[in-house]
Length: 305
Image 1: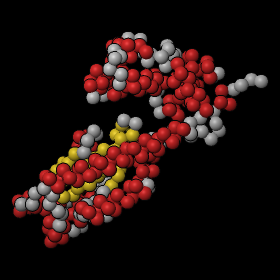
Image 2: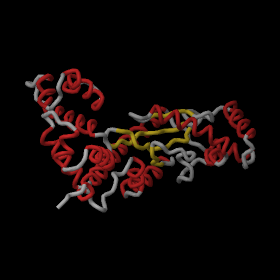
Image 3: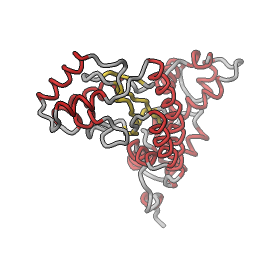
Image 4: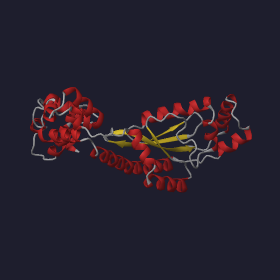
């Protein structure tokens, strides 16, 4: 009987979810919903979990406890662009740890990253507070800018909503950042669990490929060898692996070897060069480059903790 390539792939095989889909699942979890409610009751601040590539307006738009002044700004396209610029700057600074940034209107925006598989996939957004009581000059500048935008809100309403924002001292800002950072760690753990669950549902072809790589990573492993072992063409295997594993074959193999190396480096009696060759790298410079790219530091510094 002739065995076709398609016969090794489940008919209901699905692609691994990307970061956006994982974030959508996180937003619906009981963990997130209960924390958002408790956080709002405790601080009086809005909270939203948005994917890293979220650009549909203010991330806190429509959330409970949203400041009326910020809601008015977010409702106008020209005014909203001001918010989006602040959010873009904040997101670029908060990829590794939580940050607070003051917007042109004098209010603080807060973003704390949520990671999955070592990559930032989302931010916990909060803020809309003053770092210090606003001065009359500061309010006048904000009111003038809003008047230029012709917002559907009167000046008395602007003044009332502007001054309704709470004032958070540096100590309170740090406390909020710490609280959100600890919760982001829980969301990171949950995101990795969801990803792992999706990976466990991979097609048999990918499961067998990964099993082969785990068993032979210390050897010279070529794409052609794995495809031949699985009785499929190199082109077909390469395409399916990237689709379902979410990484190129060479990137996955490098990550696999680096993770094994981390375990071996915990033994202080093992030399770095010894570990490099035992996990399958053909040269120490290649091992060092791959380790730093994947782990963010060198093998020696990683071992030192």
